[in-house]
Image (cartoon, rainbow, N blue to C red; front, side, top):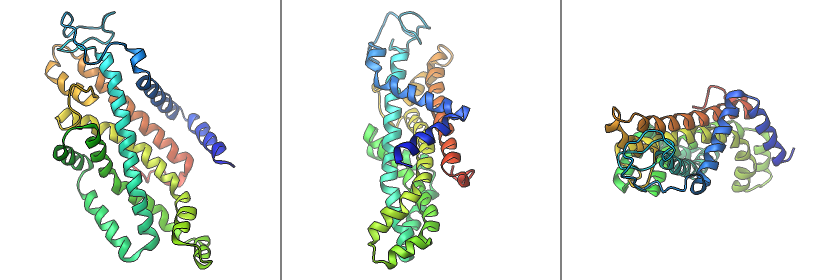
Amino acid sequence: MTKSYAGIDVLRKVMRIPHAAFGVVFILLTVLVAIFAPWIVPVSPEEMDFDNLLSNISSTHLLGSDQLGRDTLARLIYGARIALIVSIGAIGLGVLIGVPLGLIGVYFRGAVDDIIMRAMDALVVFPSLLIAVGLAAALGGSLTTVIVAIGIANVPWMARVVRSQGLAIREQDYVAAALAGGMSHARIIFKHILPNSVAPVIVQSTLSMGYAVLTEAALGFIGVGIQPPTPTWGNMLQQAFPMLEQQALLSVVPGLAIFLLVLAFNFVGDALRDVLDPRLKGVIH
């Protein structure tokens, strides 16, 4: 079966699971809304309407406005862009660093494996959110900083997932035969070990994207994430918190968006885990 047909087959199986189908549809809708944001909401998320401060739902502001008269819907949609960019960028960075480290450790074993995994264990000791907060606070609140902070926090998990999967593959007869036949270390790693370790990486990446959305929102809420006036769901919650009694909708809208997107990624990740490798059920979190 070719890779394209295999991908279609996996998608078909995932879409047969009701909660996973909801996750796929919601993620696709979020992506489309984020891409076509300028056409969906022609109003700038930073434009202030002083005649409609803290307004409720109306024809002018479909989800109301905040204390500065900024349109909540526009800020929500542009905030979705940030959430998706951060999740894709951070998990991509985690995979780019963590997967090679895991492959090198599992293949060469011995002192190399010990050094890499002890370094990963040292990072895992600290909660991922704490690492992200520390890096974001130290480097400053920008989009790049947030991506790097969350990405570094995900490196140990990617490395550990690849290593745990690769340990079994490393002992297979075809790997020993390739090694005895004079195949180079790089070819063995990329031809035999990596392709057979992709499934858990995909699952872990999907689940981690939900966590990245949550972490980015947390960083924004406590003030060390991407700084205003750039709208993010986290700083929307931060700015809405003092207005909770006056205009609860300001908190409900970004909070619900965070909840649904994280839930969607978790649903899809769980379904991919069951479809790609049922043996991983209940193992990867």
